[in-house]
Amino acid sequence: MKKVIIVLAIFILDRATKLYLINLQESGVDIDFYILPFLNLFLVWNTGIGFGLISLESNIFYHAMTAVIALINIVIIFLLIKSKSFYVYPLIFILGGALGNLFDRVYYYAVPDFIDIHLGQFHWFIFNVADIFITVGIIIIMFLELKKKEITK
Image (tube, rainbow, N blue to C red):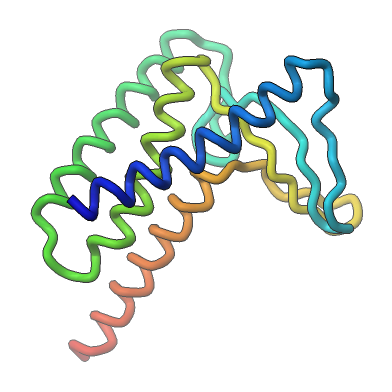
């Protein structure tokens, strides 16, 4: 039950941040806020996968990618149910974020991204709260796997 609550909390946090900015934009506010010299909020609609990669206009490709993402979510749920180790926590992060982005892909046919980190004129990919949780979860799993390999040597 605790797993479900954490996944829902991540999903709700992601939805709340996206809805706040979408509602601001719909009320006529230009979403281009500079918060820090290296951070601003700039709303874009991503039809690709993580960080805007593989953005194509093809409807068939978009729906195929959405189906693959939905299947990956099902696999993550299965792994989450089966896992009893510390891997549960990064899987929870990944699932919470992945469900948030999957919801957007189905509801809006695009994912709203808005966090823009930059150094001078160099801008990283624009991303959202869901992407943060997915990325942190993947990094934790990679770290755990590296530690496991180090221990078995």
